[in-house]
Image 1 (cartoon, one colour):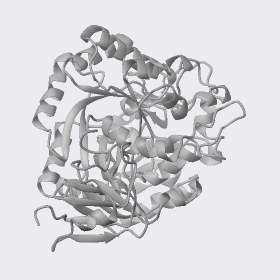
Image 2: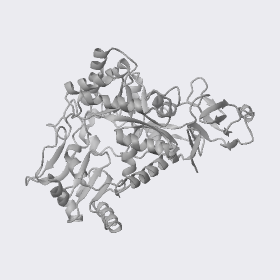
Image 3: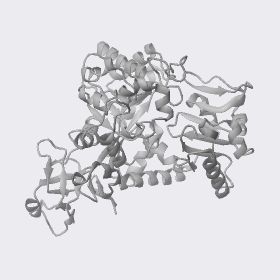
Image 4: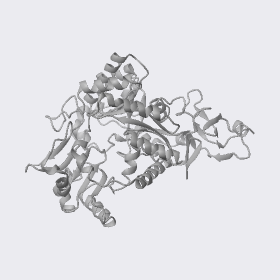
Length: 535
């Protein structure tokens, strides 16, 4: 039977994300593509001697989820070291460090990841003195969950030369204490980069092992594509090697990092990456900028001062002139542009740069993107649609009740809550909205992100809820996410001829209340026509 399917998923609640046929009962796969979407009865005609039939028993089947903001290698590498995501206070921190040190007596540095802000005594920020009390001899470097702040003890500061401070470059800071020495808090890579460079790196075999662990986590969650947010030719080679070895269980879109030190002529390297890598699982074709930092570290760039530091507006990594020049050149070379922009002034400067590129190079289907958009001024809402710019946001970044006393909320102040994490307002203004996690900043579990998007409540009487519907959220994780990487003709929907990327859940998600969606589990994940997870 020439048209026999390799797999048929039947008796399913299929959410196709295809507006022309939103739902179905069955999906059939042949090779690496969708062979059929429709009724159980018609799917049965595609059954051959080798066909595996999977009875979904009424559970939801949908396109494989696309995480539009992800750090595949960084997240995988952070599966090593001290895991600090559940640490809430100084006592728990000390216990975590001591437990890890006892299990890894040969480690020369104690490096930890995922720490939240305010875990020092009485909820204040950590100092080197706090860490010295936990470990006075071995160097300690702890990185915040968002990757924009680190804390070090005195031995680590001394080894790196940071104890007496050094020039950190733009928008980075070594916090100095009353004694004129580093207090232990290091804001942005310019400050903590020299310390991180001293932490021993895993060898190639360990990196590959950690990458496999990260990929396995994604497969268990139904993730079949990621838009990577850090990249260079070396990371690209690692992903290509994993693809060639048959170990890559998702599709990865890899950008080229542009820093304030990047020269115009170096952007040609991004073009070379794109031209050299356009395979089925690993692709290049974008560049990535960091316009600013984060609210928590006072490095997010704001139009108005921080509520708890009225002299501070944050800062930018690029001057407006520098960003416009680099963005215009990247656009001229046909590259897609991603820009990390947290604060409202960072968002505005990014949109200004895109407008400058359009004025210089002419209008094209560029699909440039703004990543995060934690604050936005109302005057900039309509500019996304006007410029064809995609809003790439992460629902689980938004503080969740009753955590309105978080560092983030305190630093922006109540007067800005109504335009914080404003995905509903941005979408209603006509922007294409794509969702992701920013793993390892928060969990890569998309079902927790979906839950956060649809259950978002108003932070104050004067603030809108910003929640969106389940359908709108799923579109942002599938069809829109595919559009955000120029792949909407190949994935993001279950439609005949499209790539066989899909997820089968353990339940009919349309039949469960929104409050239970974070508990959804994946029964099977298929990527490129291959089962990469079954549980």
